[in-house]
Length: 77
Image 1 (cartoon, rainbow, N blue to C red):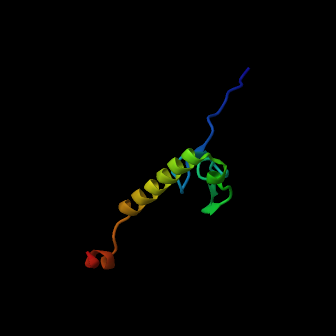
Image 2 (tube, rainbow, N blue to C red):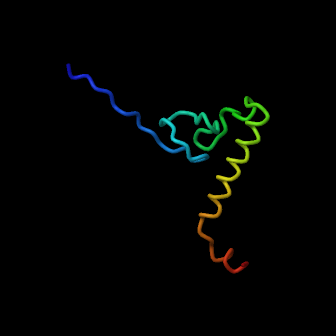
Image 3 (cartoon, rainbow, N blue to C red):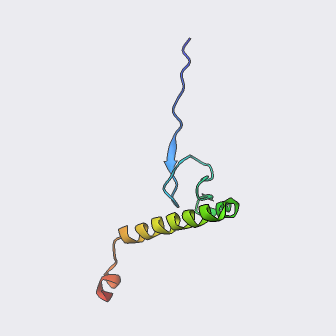
């Protein structure tokens, strides 16, 4: 028999960076195509919610740091 399994094609979530199957909502942050579809934080316990919020805020901060500065931003510094 010539049956074989293919590995699923994974893409990274633009919001949190986790690996997700294509054309599906991210289970980690609940976003799809830049829109919040599922409020993931609502379902978590209090400790988990704080931890997840810190992780998401840290990732957004890293994205801002990695972005190159424009000429106006450079002149302000």
